[in-house]
Length: 129
Ligand SMILES: [Zn+2]
Image (cartoon, rainbow, N blue to C red; front, side, top):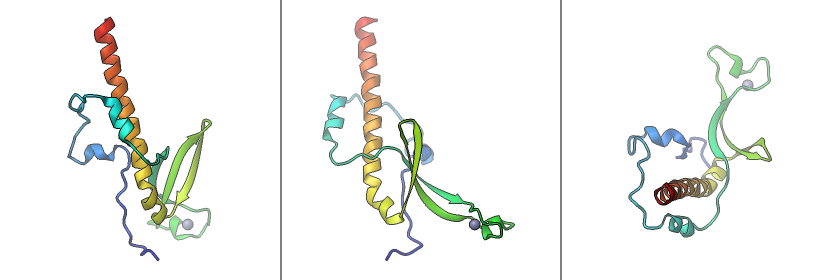
């Protein structure tokens, strides 16, 4: 059984930007073939985002309504869009840890696609004006 004090290192989306390593995303060194990065990715990719949230419940006399409130959670919410609707599913810490690489893969794919599109657009404009 997992301890309740188990901590996870999630890659919440833009928080990376404040972590100091790279203040903003520099265009990567001219990659020889941006398409190759995508081809190198193996395994699974899960859509959506994983976020940790503290919640209030519906009970009237709950500690989450106290002053100061003691909120429930944190709960790990996986949110994605299906046919235009937001779908949320709560994951256990163990599930979140297990599937984190799948979320990371999807994020890397999105970044690689963005890079590829940017470079392709530049190539198009260079060629066609
Ligand atoms: Zn409550």
